[in-house]
Every structure is written in C-alpha cells, then in structure tokens.
Image 1 (tube, rainbow, N blue to C red):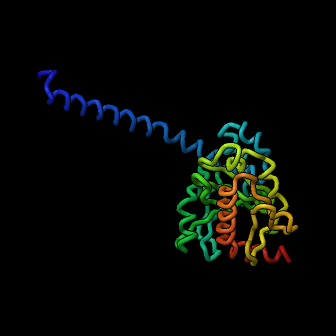
Image 2: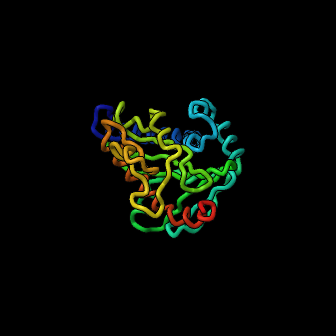
Image 3: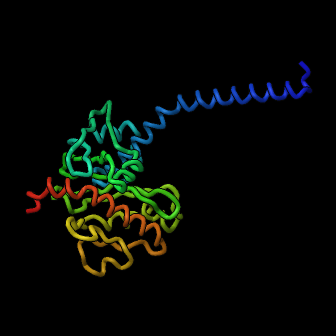
Length: 248
C-alpha cells in the first residue's frame, strides 16, 4: 500500500485509535478495584472522623486495610431508610463485604423530588449514629457526615468535603478543623424551622442549633447550610420516631 496515500493515513489512524482505546479500557478495568477500594476507605475515614472513632490525622495516616478493619470493629449496624422514615434495607458491615451508600447525588435528587430514597444510617457500638449530607457549593458539590449522640439530636462531630471550592475560603469547610469542631455539642431542632442555622453571626443568638458561617465564603456556607437542612429534614421522621423515648 502506498504509505503516502489518503487511504493509508485513514487506516493507520484508525488502528492507532483502536489500539489506544483498548489499552485505556484495559488499564481502567485493572485500576477499578483499586480505585473502588480507595473511595470506600475515604468514605469510611470521613464517617469515622465525624463519629470521633479516631482523630482525623490518624485516620488519614492509616492504610486502607486498617481503615476497613477499624470500621468493622466499631460498627454495630448499618441500614437505609426511605423518606417515610421507615427502614427499607440493610447494609453489610462484614469486613469482607462492607456496603456503603456513597453515591449521594442520586439520593439528594430523590429527597428534593420526593422519590424513592435509600438514605443510610450507620450506628456505631459507641451509640453514635452517622448520616451523610450533600449539596451544592460555589463551584461544585459539597458533602459531609454528621454524627449524632445517642439522643438523636445532639451532634457529636462532623466532617465536610468538596470538589472544587476556593482554597483559603470555601475549602475551609474541609481544611480547617476549628470549623468542623464548632458543630460538636450543637443540636438539630427537629420540629422547628430552620432545623439548623449556618449563617453569619448565627451564634450570637445563643441558639443550640446555630453555627457561624465562614467569613469570606458566603456561597459555600449558604450551600452547606441548605444541604444540612435538606438532609436533616429527610431524616426527621426516622430520628423523631426512633429517639423520642430517649429524649424524654
């Protein structure tokens, strides 16, 4: 074949594209188990940081296998609920097949649309329960985990993360321990509006459900505040029904 012809160029280019695509597909297939393991361990680190199982820096210094073992050793049960507040599934806590609901965007849509939701509740042996929150920041998704004391309304701890918030401003929801620590001891005002108040100078009210927003990160703080209220509302029926006796 004439190597200078258009036909040769087209065939050669097509072959290169096919070979490259095949290599990329093979590489992605090989890397997926490792990527999935990393994602699972990251979710568990965030959950256990909120639940105060270990300090955040220690959790991030622990290898994936150790993180999974720590979770398996400390978790009591994990299950899912619907928007009616009723349990609609269980999640395995066995070390070899730990199950999580870590795709939060579809659940966020289900909450807002009133659709079929499978919202996770992770109950640790300490009596602390952990739930996720998810919403929109200034530049992309923001999410986190809120841990509750056995009374079902007092916050034991929190962990937040983001996809692309501004360094030094909105990114402080993850980077600054002092911000996360503000949530410990606060309470969600189930049965009231708002359930939680994250706003500028919110703490001046002295309310138990108030945390000051991050200065200079107005939109990120607003997005996180909305996410907290949307997800707390989604869990309200379940928490009110299951923790009522303890609150009394």
